[in-house]
Image (cartoon, rainbow, N blue to C red; front, side):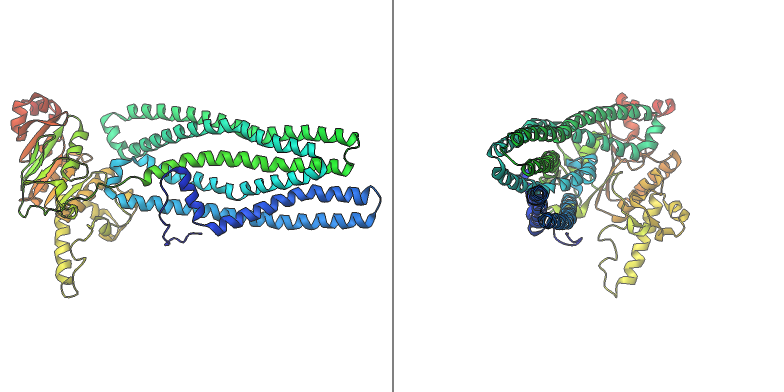
Length: 583
């Protein structure tokens, strides 16, 4: 199987079918071994009726005990050998499936890492989770066709040859009847693909909603919106259940026909063979062999139907993986240098202008509008935004990332110690020489304490058993929502970018802590450009400039108190009590 550190290769993402074939082509010898074991195993299953017929015709009927013992011994030997083949077939196909499973996981994870910050802007978290949890397993299971599927074809041809030696009429019936059975199931497989595709899409939506609920349950409860979201979740889950019933209905028919039609066909062929035996056209032993051959064919035909079912589901899931693999990050076509001095950021689409060295707030009727503007100003989405006199998309991306930081209030927190969790990549001291390390460490500790103080997060460190060296779970789940938000703010402040864009940095904090953070944030970022999206009057009262947005465009600009007195819409949006509204 693929090693954990082995390169999975470059996947063929032209289509779902080509991706499945790529998984097969990456392990050709193992797939060939699975096909060989499956073929020999099924052919020997078909050989069993032949050996039994010889034992009856050559030994039992004429009373030749020697011949009977010989053919019985051959029957036992073939059965024992076939048991070993069955074990090897199963073992090999398990390795084929596991390789496809791990290889798909690696290419999906690699693509997620390559997309980085672009990923959440192109595909929802629920869709990615559905791929990693469900689609990977279904894709690997569909590769069963390279083992038992190939074996079923070989066994079908072998039985056809054996039947020709018994009765051309029976051989013709079998050769024509089995494909008809498979074709009867075909339309159901097409319908299954459609139902399965819709089911997977609904599953992705529901998974995303579960993530939203888990991440924002405290806020929803505080705003009284938990019931509304719970009702929406209930409706989505009921739709998913109904779609699951549709998929199950088609699946049940596929599986029922896969077993029922071959069994019915066995009865028809056995009746035909019995008539031929009664007429003396075939012997009793040949009658037994015909029954055995057709009974053996029930297995291959069922495998074909099962393989068709698995491939149909595998294609649906492979298309979803291919769609994910086709996503591309925004191309870095910029060649110009960033402004050498602090300069204004300007988004012409909304009219937002961020002056250098000031604390600016974006207040929007729809919070997503403000977040979209920050995405444009940080060059995470295509836009005509400028930095100074230069368009952002003309500036080299690495220079933008070094000097502009977008801090999302839901950004990932990786498992490790708290110290590692908040340490920015390439932070102070990371590249210091041995001579500079003591000074760099002192400088980093000073910056860390300053950031903790600015985010009012000292109490978090003090409450942990080992302080900054305490092991933290992924996403800091052992902290409350407000504590996680402050830890994210600490990490952003510690990075100390020239321009800091923050999304709702205090939305999960209580009023006292929020006021403290608002006071300290301006001091910590004094002289550096900072933008916050918020509707909190505690934060807005401490900003230099506020842009009030309506439908994603600037409707008014000024200080917090100026907008309270001149803009009714702004006052209605941010005022939390009558007294402040009057002011």
